[in-house]
Length: 159
Length: 159
DNA sequence: GACCGATAGTTACAACTGCAACTATTATAG
DNA sequence: CTATAATAGTTGCAGTTGTAACTATCGGTC
Image (cartoon, rainbow over all chains, first blue to last red; front, side, top):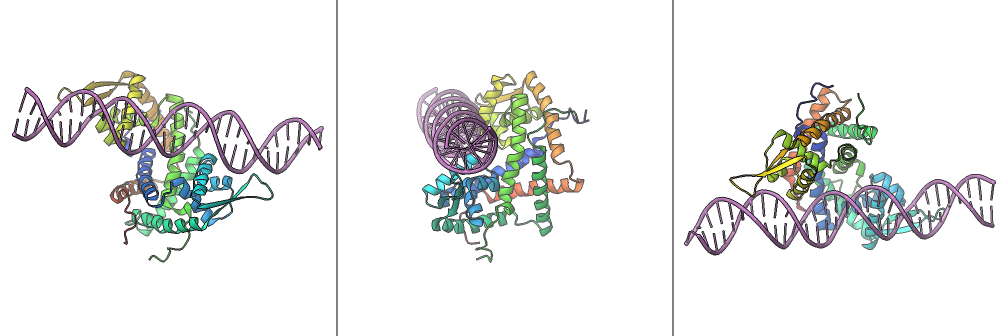
């Protein structure tokens, strides 16, 4: 048994908790602005963002690229179709597979959101040195890989 | 206008997105385990965790400590009362104010969850050096402060 | 000591999310 | 060529979460 087994846990030193609070703060700020200013939800923005970079993807591929599940993508896509920011075709080879592209209107919001997003990020990271940004980048990559590897938690394995 | 205004944005380099994906991965892993193994939701666990450290807090104070809103706390508390993991009194001085403490059963789950939580965190951070952990700690603190300071985003102010 | 604004906590309702079932299409086996 | 299994995407339902309205109590003022 680890020696700290009976030491009470301080939530404010617990990394998963701190990550969660930080993400909530950041996401709430961004989501509010996207919604109010562009009539976009975060899932919609993500779909837009990947399709701007790689036009013609299918919904399933968008899901992979955005770490969203297929239901979330489906709903985001249908929202974007409703607001005419996306056009959808279907692949000749496989008519189940959708082919998604930004419409002109989609490109237009995209190019309004991008500087906005960059500016938020720039401000968030404003007083980090180049070195610290590098550390942040490395840590995020590392932790993401680790979290994926750990996966849906082994309940109570003796270590 | 910044010179990158018309460069498309790569989602996988965008810090708010990466934070969100990382937090989702970590939270899903933890939430699943808590639910399955202890019958606890994450909000309930947070309430338990702060009350274990500071017994007798009111719901409002728990909300502050956990970065949850008062409705979420109210629901978590009522869940914990239902499962008899919490006992609630009301302050003599102010009978609106609740006085919350873990019951014996509450202490018991708490002490089963704590090692579990620590172990997950330990594994998540397993191959970080002491230095890297220090950087992570500093970065999380810094970014949290920054995000709070930026607040509900100024939509389109010229900078 | 009755009124009025503020505060603690709960409830009601709407929006969002996730899982599972469903439809449509394609690929594979016999 | 038909039957079966697999895949892309959608829809329905249930549980969760957030916002706003509500109840109860308090503190201060006249």
